[in-house]
Image (cartoon, rainbow, N blue to C red; front, top):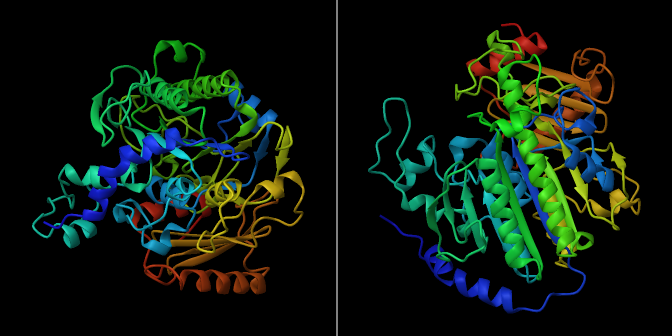
Length: 495
């Protein structure tokens, strides 16, 4: 077995890095940065989006009212691991071979936001879901790194426990973590702010998972509010398994599918957590020196293509990806698709006194921009390897042109590009679509026959981009069964 001695050395030195960061004076003019990420939350489920009447998110609405609501916010993939890899590195994850969950773990050589900010004197903390370590579907990685490991009959592998630590958030530049999803966490501090093993230890945490993750975030703020910090809070909700105490469920009485009620309750718990975090920033008198991002990792799974309507009466305790209770209105499609429903998500930026209050920004932006914005605000030199841009001058009006000439995607057997109002989707080797996503029709009607020259131009842009990925090239395989169901249902794909 080969050991990563560079990583082991990094983990051994991690506590010293934290001590030095704690002792360092606070650099002037460097804002704190918080990224709050939800899991499988659709575009509709912020009440300030005004898409559905039943969602209640007063604290997030207040955040948008004090900052900017970005209505064309995109993720880099319609699935959690690749989307998270794009966000935390600021690079298209396909460039380092992480197209989907089965491509985990994220390579240790990739430079993350916390690794970059460490050079500017920041201390970084990760709370909640990580999902960039090896997993049961990481067969390709296991064959290369664990040749003695044999996949089971269902094609899954059982990864030895030490590899989860070797690819944890601590191994990717975070100084501290409270990493986990439900009741078991790999942590360097507890929810009271007490220091644990700086190399990380397993903490069993009873209680409601979303409240636990809020408490851990508050504990990190308690520990580091007096120095520049980067906090990445990745809530595990409203992803299945759906669960919510009566405290939250009771906020949503009346006739509705129970899965919808539970999703609303979970999002309400997250909204409460956001309110507690913003209250803490005010308490520590650092709210005006903190830039806060809020977004989701991808659109909601709806299972509509399986013949199940949105209001599916599946049991709440069914831990499947059929429907998590969230909604993507008004967009077409769902998690796993490169239509808007899979990749266009809630997106808020708030920085009191620095960003205009109550602004609605309609130009396309990406979670790739979070890293580039953080690097610029930390006073670090621009890095051409980053695929995002610093959004601040675009939102304040200092720069009038859109942040991106084009945004790109590749996932499974789909690839897409958005350039201005136009979006081109290449679906396997079967068909192509062209949409005006700024129109009322958005992705309801394929416009490719009427605009062949635009489609050719976008196809060329997309092919040029995919030629620089790892592996290179447009998807050229038939759609898998799941993709076929989606594109038949939503876009009328025929065999």
